[in-house]
Amino acid sequence: MLTWRPRQVQIVLVLAAFVLFAFILQFRSSLQSQFQYYTCTSKQETAASQASLSPSTLFDPSTPFLRRHIAFATSVEHPEVYSPLAWTVHSLMSRQPPTQPTSVKIYAFQRGFHILLKKIGMLPMDIMLPEAQLSKDIRSSSLYEDDMGAMIDLVVLGTCEQDLEKLGPDLLKAWDERPQDKKFMLVCSVHNPHTTPWFKHISKWSRRGAFRVVAISDHVVNYYHSMFNDWADSKDPAQRLSLYEYIKVDAYYAVSNFTNFPLRPKTYLADVPCSAVLQGLYESGRRDYDRVFADLLRLLKEDVRAWGYTWSLESKKYIADAAAPNPPFVLHLVGKGKITVPAELQDVVVLDVKLDTVPFYELIQSTDILLPGFAPGGEYLKLKGSSTVHTAIMNHVPLIVTRAMLESYPYLTVEGTILRPFALSEMEVIGLFRGAKVTAQAIEGSNGGSKPLKLDDLSSPDVSPELANDVRRMLSQGWKRSYQSFDKFKQDIWKKNEEYVGRLLRDL
Image (tube, rainbow, N blue to C red; front, side):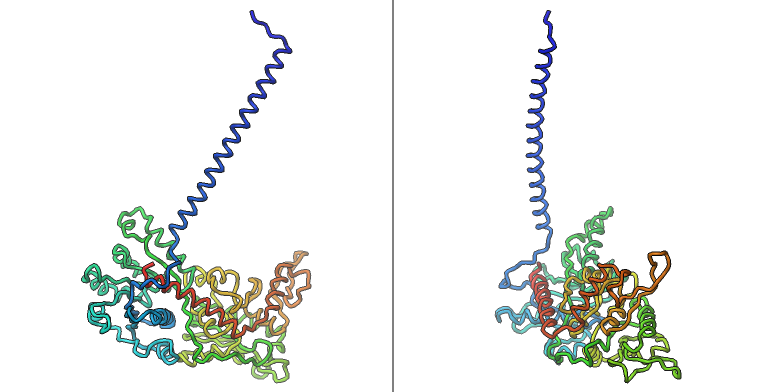
């Protein structure tokens, strides 16, 4: 019978422990190696997958256009949105060799904006045609003397929410009537996702592989991407087979070239902002007029002279103070509809109602700052694109923005904007630039009571270091933006727009 001494047992256990430890080290090393391999492989596969899903933005500019005869059409307004796109298309096509005949036409009622763009040389004088003529021209193979047999091969609807309802059925019939090598692409310009009746027409086009969407801002592009993906992943087979996932959704920034308007270097009444403009329909659901009025009344009461006014006991309103250090500040509300301005602000706020095209843009260009004034709820940051942004850029007027706006409109840069902290309202920003006393509404103090926050005193312990730094940065950058800054800003935007049109005309 084999017997074990305690010393022998101890030696065996130690040897076994060494063997087990060595095995664990080897196993751990193997696991690490496998983990690194799979991690690396996973990253490579993910990158490859993302690359295959990303739209192609790179192409050889010498590649011929697949779409050469373009028709813009609309039964409603928004010429300020689709006309700049027609300009970009025309500009890009005019650089093509004469061996590739091209054409651009707009089938719509001619409006003041079209006349202005033709006058300043952005659009050809013969670009406009009656909307009703599209039904005939879309079926014609003899429209172009220099390109016999060619047909309209791309149609852009200016306001898809209405145009696809009105023009879509006839366009679809014309599409089906054409032979396979003569099919056209339909591009829908979208504005308001709350308007949904036109959605029912989309599947008829997406199943044919002949449908694209364009929006004037990136957040609207993201919204429609998500919407089409949700539809494509539906439990309903009819939805899934409508091929929504293949609908291309792109951004075009509707910034016109007003160089020949003419756009001259700005002249200022003083070194402080003396005018601002808030543009849009007089609807509280679109612009936060109540907050603007409340802020103005509060700030005027606090430091009336800094705003260039004095209080008139006789007329019970603020009137210009000739003895003030700077000219009075004037707020222009450009739009249409009905709005009630507080009686005290009758000389401060000017209503510019239903201006014609040229006076409208002349007024915008004459002002110092443009206010978005977006209503609460964030629709212009999540669902809808705002033409106010483009109006500011193409007229060389700095736009007051927040970080949220920069996220929704990522093409905005410091060249054309004034970045305000959320803690400051738009009117408080203007007050600080005018050197006025600016006290925010009461906040809770350290002792539990409420006290005012003086935003013009950044050394106060009540002002957080982060807010103070943001305000100092804003003030140090100033409120004026140079002609050269805006010109660089626009050139970058136009380059992005040409990249989009280059893809569009090549079916990319």
